[in-house]
Image (cartoon, rainbow, N blue to C red; front, side, top):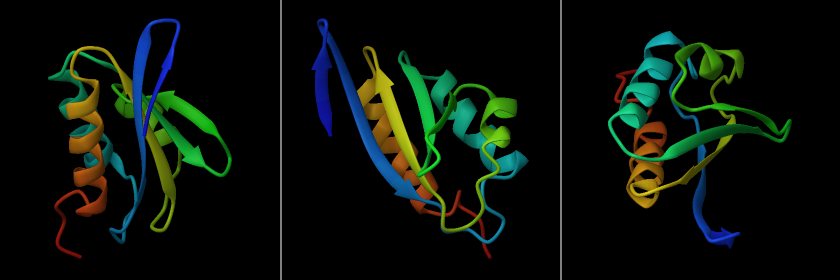
Amino acid sequence: MLFRAKNITVYQADAKIVNAKGLHARAAADLAKMAEKLEAEFKVTKLPSMMQVDGRSILDLMMLAAPKGTVLRLEASGRDAKKLVKAAVKLVESGFNEKD
């Protein structure tokens, strides 16, 4: 999804956590490291609680306490926003490349 506010383009998409361990330390680190490589602000929201954290912070991501089945809203703005949201969705929906 794409929306604009005050000349800022924001991309967002929802992704369901499918790996057995959920958003644990290594998964959070992979997501944060990916975000750090791109030029975009990155927010992750746990649905339906609407708890939102900085997607570049491993500790913030772990505070979501998101087990398997949790839906995350991935939202980015900035030069690489679209690329970041697409890559984040792919990472989450791949189970963080884990072999369960």
